[in-house]
Amino acid sequence: MTYGTKTAVDGLSLTVETGSITAVLGPNGAGKTTTLETCEGYRRPQSGRVRVLGLDPVAQRRELLPRVGVMLQGQGAWSGVRAMEMLRHIARLHANPLDVDELAERVGLGECGRTPYRRLSGGQQQRLGLAMAIVGRPEIVFVDEPTAGMDPAARRTTWELLRELRSSGVTVVLTTHYLEEAEQLADQVHIIDHGRLIASGSPEELTRGTSATIRLVVDKELPAGAEAALRASVSSWSEQYDIGVRSMSFGSRTLEDVFLELTGRDIEHDRHDA
Amino acid sequence: MTDTTRDAVRLDLAPHPGGAPFARQVLAQASMEARLMLRNGEQLLLAVVVPVLILVGGVTAGEHLSLKLSDPRPLVDIFTPGVIALAVMSTSFTSLAIATGFERRYGVIKRLGASPLPKSGLLLGKILALLCVQLVQIILIGGVGQLLGWTPKAGVLGAVLAVALGTAAFAALGLLVAGTLRAEATLAAANLIYLLLMAGGAVVLPISAYGSFGHVARWLPSGALGEAMRSAFLDGSVAWRDLGVLTVWAVLGTSLTARTFKWE
Image (cartoon, rainbow over all chains, first blue to last red; front, side, top):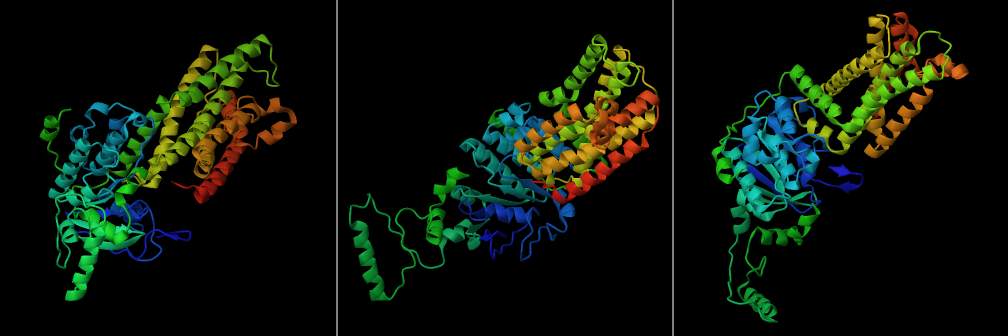
């Protein structure tokens, strides 16, 4: 996908397992939303091939859409529409919708059902967006940053709901720049940056790595010069035994470490620009 | 809601997808849009309050000042069809343009674009909503007209055709504005064009009141709609020429809109 001369997504190839949760992880501007919108049929790829449930999202959009649930990043409702009214409207467009009252209660919209959309908090708008995405009982849902702007309790509730969708046989594809979200939720994580896929695997695979790992846990903060001294020792050790050191990290190894190694950027740093 | 009650709700999330029948989707969309339009204070002002004020003000002031139009018939019989035409114009053009402009801005059209509702259904829903709102307007304005002594001729065919073609022409032009400009610019342009046409477009007053400009005004969609409505209710006739003018505007507007409209 290119916009003008800027390439947003390039040579990206990934496959999603039915009934799984897949996270597309990356910093802002990495091409997450573009990737999702290409799957949703909003954008036509200049080259390459996209198939969702075996269908072309652009050419066969009308056939595909009723089977897909979409949660956009922000907005998507009339400013004066009441929360429940909006949800009920989307439900009416579907043949076998969920019970809207039960769904509203489940996602925690019970108290703001009569509130106009423009007066909902960011988190409430997110919950309504998620409810609208799943009310039509889709086979696959694409959720763009589902928990952005949610408080921790609402985030847990959302995670539970996404897990419940998976156990009911729904395929979930989400974008996130929260590492914890990908680690907690996803069966498969695809890390993208600058529109390119840079790593794929389960959170365990990504954090484990394929080669031998030596972990050193120390009992205090490193004093000045200690890190440099350790690096020097490791360097002479690796020469002596002819072992290449692929990476060395200080701190606890998490998915974030993987991300930093791969991109050289701090993902959490971008969080507030969303 | 406490967490315990939330946990108690077990939803059957197993996939069971499908779009509702097309007609039901269109009806849902139409009722949603009509409700939003009737609930919005500014839109209601434009749709009902302004036309009723113009009707009452025009008729009473005209009588006090012994306003003479070239048409000798009672002022209320001339004004009421014109005000009905104005109401059709305000809803089909101004209200639709503003609402659609903000729908684009707020991502409503994008969101609905991911629902089972096809674009044709969205358009049909909008037109149906306009017709519903206009029916309410016509009943209210007609009722006020009756109180002022309006005695319409039963030009049903002419009136129905005028509303239908007037709606088509002005809705196409309204979408043309909304689909190309930003929301704020649409708001300004739609109101400005409405005011200009109301004052100089031969919608409320007959073209005979505009002197030589009347020959220009009758080719405007506003003048054509006003004249068609007056023919229907004053003479009980069908103004084919004016309806033809509206048809041309509708075709022109639709083809331009189809070429330029951006859904997002």
